[in-house]
Length: 560
Image 1 (tube, rainbow, N blue to C red):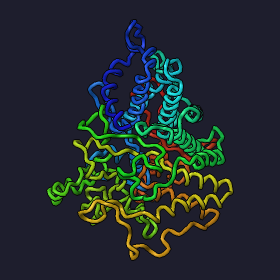
Image 2: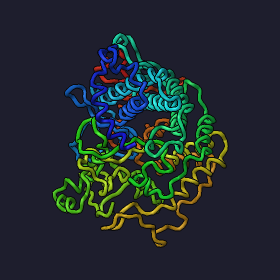
Image 3: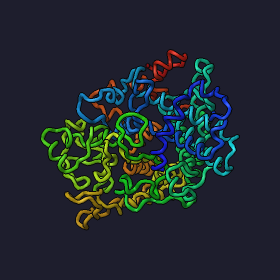
Image 4: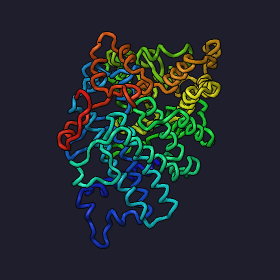
């Protein structure tokens, strides 16, 4: 799918330059319109590619001459949690600190960018869902493309609802007359649509193994099933107005496990490297490819790598020259693992150095200097976001590194949690121990020896006795073990915050993260939907962009 992504850029410039009312009303004979465009199979495929493009816009989008702010999922899934801090130098990008401390204003650039990009993408997706059913193309291709569109709509609304709560719900391209008449749907209503979309995708999409190599990375039956399970699991712990239960999560994850389409990748250390992209464990990744573009959405790469790279090496006066000589990738040092996360790993857990690296460690064959002043005070950087110097692009703002959104290990741990709540502790322990067994077999992170960029096994004298023993506990201790395993298996993958919220542990985690600043917790509580009724645990929400709230009469979120 990487080559398709490069071709897509030209398509976007031509096709979407006129997606206003004039485009929708165009009826000239002999010309492409939104009605006949999809009658060409190649056009239909390219249109769906443009829908995938929209979910990759975490750098922001252009609204005329204005570029909106960044909105990487790690800003929420990691930085809002106890696993990560803003990072970088103290005075850089203060808006990230405002987000981390729940001091965002309704004029927040993050909220505006996320909102605008999502609804711009939803316009594309809804156009595809509207026009594809009547397209004169191969039926099998049509069904697959519809499945991909339904998946992407469910994916987009699921992202929106976890951040904002209930949002305006559009299932067709928005008409100008609807701008001011559409209000926010309830959380339950949006989730019903999300579930419907994922179910529609499941019935239409092929399995991963049924795609050709050129289409690797597209949405699959397994991906739609996984995200449906995740959406239900999140509802169970937040707003469960739709009355879901853990058996649904168990059955959905069981379908994925029994499909035989996925397995744990043998070496944990390789999962986040270029070597591990779209591997046997990958359920869904956002695909990227390198090119020489820097800023803006019309490019194939991502800025996620440079944002989280080692700022000490490339900015500190004492190390800049050495770093350039050794080929250290440029980095701005954001999203830095906390000391609490690093210290929470069991002794010798190979996943710790694959998740966070600090001063004196070696990464991709390069000795690392890490100054706390350049890493938000934590002294660590995110190893999973680090780009291998062998794949550094012409522009560091256009990294080819895919962003992992769902792994098979998560499915196993989701089923473990579901099994626990269903009273089946045997299956719960089985699934957790599968994940731990793979972790025990991991090598050191790639390039852990200075001057060599390869995988090296741990020596016998480096492996603690009884490393990561099987979990044998029961009751509450077993549940805690499952949650702990999720933290350490999925660390720095933008999952932790959502886990803390849905399990009712977020307020406590925030108190531990900011022990000397009680105002952070107070502000978070102010901006939360309180527990009560069908709301199982408090749900913190970010502000509806003030421009949207005032222009279209949308109810603002609590405290903004």
